[in-house]
Image (cartoon, rainbow, N blue to C red; front, top):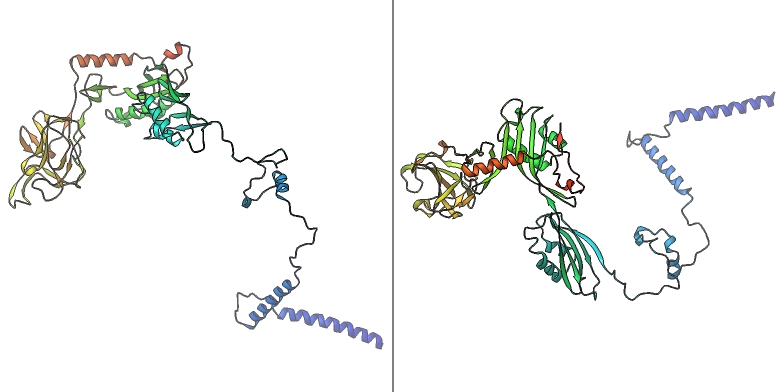
Length: 493
């Protein structure tokens, strides 16, 4: 009984120890949140526990010592090069592995690296560029570039189209201190001319190859769908021609009044070379057949040195006066006012525009310069006669850009703002005369309309009939010569 009693007591003590440990663990927070109750006894105890665990982890870590192994001998440079092509070289060392095999006994070092016998390259003419600058950028010597310009200067007097490619071959040079000579140059000077420059001995020679070009205008017709632009593009009309067409039509009718089902007629310059290249030129004819409202037939015609659009009847486009003959605000109106210099009230026979010194002054409408020079209190002064008893005056200029007897167009620069004559500062004094007497410039709106007559009208109608007799679609002359013709579809229905 005593033995049994002692064994039962020991088991009871063991259970009591476990109970007490569990109760202690429940009462004591072993892993406190160090973000709460900062500075309390529990927080410091948790901090000590954290440091203890970290220290134990560092103390029990295995370390990072190198693993023992067999030492490898360093490779000689020749051995390194031998296995170089089979290595993966890091970027820090150039990453040039795999580009060459390691040398063998048959390889002998060269004192000088041999040059390529010739260099073939393609350059391009940039915007506002010249052939000479393009050749210089490509590495052509100054003497060869000058020789080329002397040979082909007459052929490219009108300039070379930006984007024209230049096929260039530079030959072998005698020494490294000399530029490579130009052996070959080929480019398209114009749509109808190809040029080729070759070296024969020490002399450059040019070969000109004419190219046949069909200059028959391109006529495109179609029915308007959702929009004129989309319908014309679907028919193959070039964007440049459509934009010009819309500008011309918009001067005659409101584009919003054009409905689906109306028909458009576009005739534009179209030059197509026998080699396949094509160039789209200016718009020649703009026609619009409407289901409601009058039709439009506009032809581009040059009259009196000005290219403008005329209706089929020979009536030209109407042009109004500029909003202001100079870029500036109106600082003084027409009528009686106190003169800022003379000090008494007198008639101000025009309107003043305050503008910066040197600003360009434009002609209000077409006219002939009847006076140009100093004119009393007006200072530097220009007067234009516009016909029908109307004329305009421009005073206080710093510099005159028109001479007496010169014919000027609307918007042409005739002088620059200044403060000459009786003036307190830079501005333009603008006057309008009717039958020699000044009137308020704001009371008159200039409109000019050209009317063809006589032989010019007959020539105009002949040209209009010629264009309207063109077949719809691409020119057929090249196709009749058994040359391939590819291009836009010219009709959309």
